[in-house]
Length: 85
Image (cartoon, rainbow, N blue to C red; front, side, top):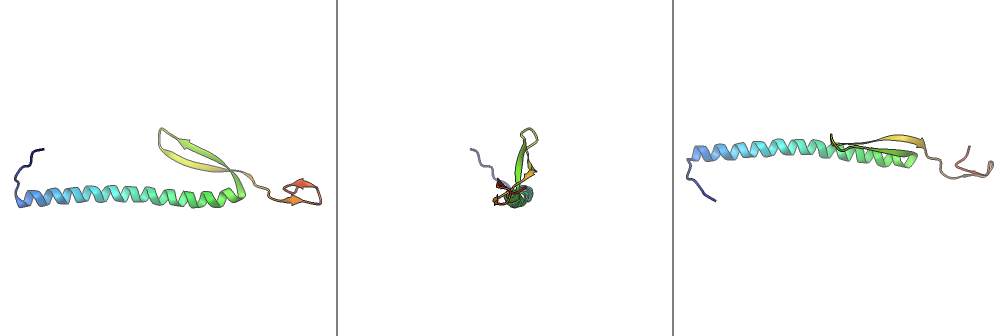
């Protein structure tokens, strides 16, 4: 590792550039983080009422799901069939 002596102006510019790069990366990651939290919340609610079809596109990095058949819970004692009708 070699350290160079630079002027105060060059040093401040480098620090500011690094801070801007990090802030941009954080904003991008925060948007991704919030999107994942939102999809996870919706997934947990939908999983209680529907069967879920899980989908991932590994090449593009897309994670999603779609709703399948509605879940039927319980036992219908009149028809003697699980799930009612």
